[in-house]
Length: 191
Image (cartoon, rainbow, N blue to C red; front, side, top):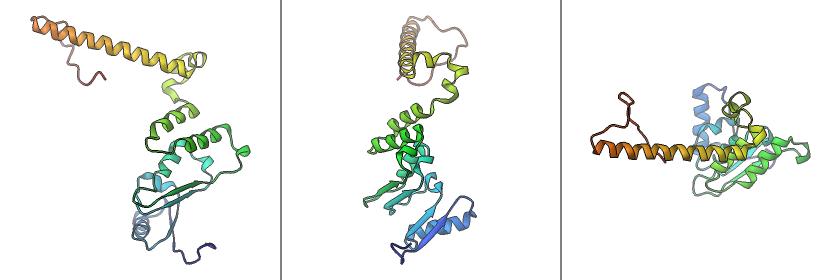
């Protein structure tokens, strides 16, 4: 470290023996290590409340949710924190990498998790749940319209279920039973 030659540096990665990794992390937590150079192992929920700066090299190679999780590893205490994502010049980035970087820049405040998850879904696609073999012609109608239709269908089913529950409650007050024998019990919420 040419900028701060007196800094104490530790290295951590997932291939280390667990006791060695734990020793490094404890030293960093106690402050006997100033700089921790590591792989994305810190994304796995290791909380370092006194860490105030995170530098991610080649952030363009990470997924959007990975970047969001990494960013959340600092700034969890009373110290102001900074996350720096190092990327090549934007003209060298793929379309998806540009979209991920723009999304992580755009959604940086509290509550950013849901918008980031939605952007990630838009960038990467929905996988097999909405994949060609499952969804039919989503590409023809578009993802936004598909989501609206899905929402309307869910709301319709909720209303039907509420009506059935209402009729069932009314029927049981009159001594009748609208549900077939052995149909079971409905659990959960309609909301």
